[in-house]
Image (cartoon, rainbow, N blue to C red; front, side, top):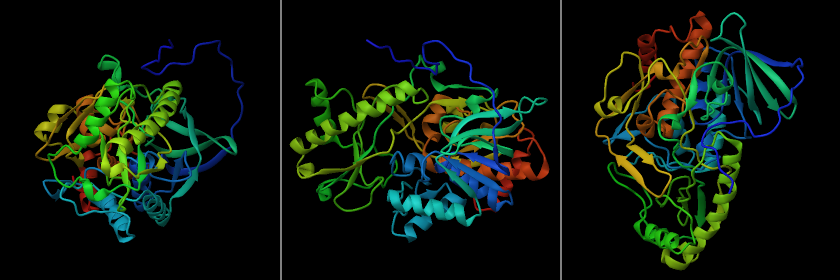
Length: 451
């Protein structure tokens, strides 16, 4: 039996020496944002609105990351206790989706069901409207560090259809979700599983079904303090596991998440352990889970009346990834910070999602939060960094704290903070490690963010 690695490692076999070569420099800008997911496209807009020239690099041909390529919905968490905890550019974005008929934004929980295609187009228009240059189908391949300053990058190396290229910038933001840029520098980062006996939260492949009798289902995740997994579907899948028909599952959730149309649901039910920053594990997850989607749909049809006539609309472009790498930041957010709502002078975003830990088996632990907590700017700054920030999935947080802060609304809010910080540092020449976090917090608040 092949043993699957739980941490990043090179493939087994002989190594080869890649010949040195000169790379063309495609562009020189103030700020490069790597990754156009929820944190990345918001970061790009924030930096551009603050006066920076910005290039946004995205590996797909569309924006949205986990929301679109992963179809992970609904977007959580814009509210807590019926009150908004995320404002600024993210709030502007969901309002624009709603105006286009592609999002439900008035649920007390602040969970935002949305239409994937509306999300893609709305994000694209927001980014282009801010004057951001976008390069699609661009993969981060490395970074070039200044010879005299280990914490300063001069270029990001990318692979595109045009070949291997470099982009020069004053500031860099890693919004890849898996730390693809930071991991290719000398800045401190590690897998979140290093302190958890090798375990990472499992990956899931979302799928969408049509032909569902949605009148029989509770579709909207509308209230706080509620677990929305479907008990009937859970019973069906649990019996299938016992019978050897299904290997594993999570939830399941069959809701209006990344669809809002009558007769359709987005389903989060598949589950597989592995390291999404490892090519072999990621490939295995895609192949295994796509097979299991077909088995689950058949089970739903045969055993639940609401799904008797259902059909598959699509599976997500890629598996949903809950956690991989994290930076070692100037501050590490802890579970105590989350649960006690600790104040920080450099707070740049609010959180309110439950501490939601998915296990490698079918279990899940959820600890609900009753008051918003604050996320400090320092969690976005790798130790020793001069001009590199992160936003989204690689921020500095313990696994327990990250189990709450990892959701998309908070990633968007952190993207706005990182984008503004990068623009300010590009203009002043200040190091990101020395930027006045309290002043940044005040500027964000003046721009409509909730801190």
